[in-house]
Length: 105
Image: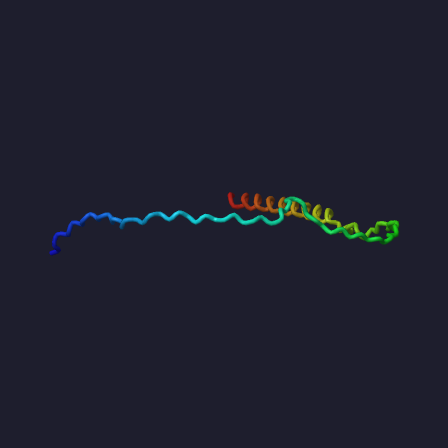
């Protein structure tokens, strides 16, 4: 049989040792400023180029028909597909209705 558990003792707060006197921070000596830099101004070197430029007229090329897409007949094939799809669906419905009439009799 286990014995009765011990009651825990409340923890005692730790008493800190006597703190030392605070040391004031060392005074920083101001640094001597160098030449001031202007913000926002960027100095770019200027290079002069003395060359004569010949003006060339742009040549106009006739637009070729290669940029257009060739006719592929996409609409015709879609129309034919829808036509045959409709015919097969009508035929299927007719066969199903016929089959139902045969089974009822």
